[in-house]
Length: 207
Length: 107
Image 1 (cartoon, each protein chain N blue to C red):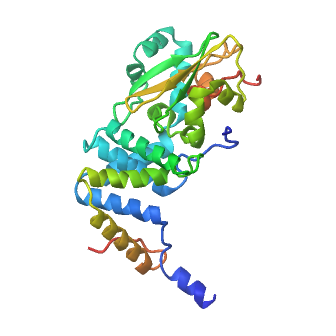
Image 2 (cartoon, rainbow over the protein chains, first blue to last red; image 1 turned 135 degrees about the vertical axis):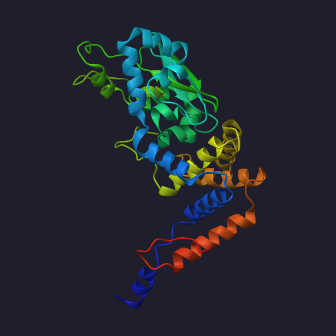
Image 3 (tube, rainbow over the protein chains, first blue to last red; image 1 turned 45 degrees about the vertical axis):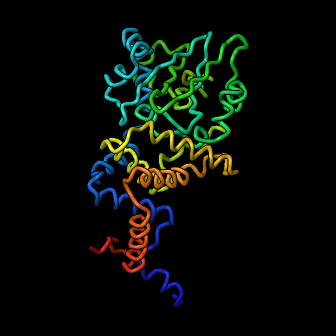
């Protein structure tokens, strides 16, 4: 080992500049008693492991198999989603929008990246990109085409612009040929993109 | 803009998770209302975009960090001197702690 390597490895690896700035913020907020470090850990833990599109998939599958649940979901999505144990940290109001043969829904946040966190986890990079935020509203069919989704010409596309107060969850269409599947099996078919509106749900083995 | 070929990690960097959690924890503790922060962050993203920033959201958490620092200072929840002092203290702690030992701020 050369002298230089010895020096490099003598002390702990210095985190990146932004990482140190975040550490400074955390230390200050905790020292001031403004945030509980345990609350922060719980949030990181939940978003790393428990909260993701699998939650939204359970909501969609339940809506597919249980017409009463579907009615409650369309009527008051915040309450219906909370029934399954999912709720937001900031009391976001959830709205479910349902795809049909006549209407295809797409969700965007033109302002920043408002997203239905409790049911989908964190947004993918493309959802946060300037291009998606600008183009989803202007050219939804072009965006869908980028994602490999082609809709019949007569299907209307509706674009929903999320805000800090209102978050949208797309309820994709249940694919044909899935009558025999259980709720869990159906949930496994539901993708993140299908709940943003940039994807469709397909029956297993089909396409 | 293409669908990713492989699943994305929830957080690309540990500090993204820490920043996300600090912001949410502070809002949940009642220090501000989430829409106030969303508006400030939205403005910062628009400014970054107008200034020719990347269009692929690779600067998303960098913009979040700068906007959150400014937001905290504007609200009187933090001040520039304390933040730079703590950053310097953490840097010193990392540089003076032998590799493999836990790094902490000396009192």
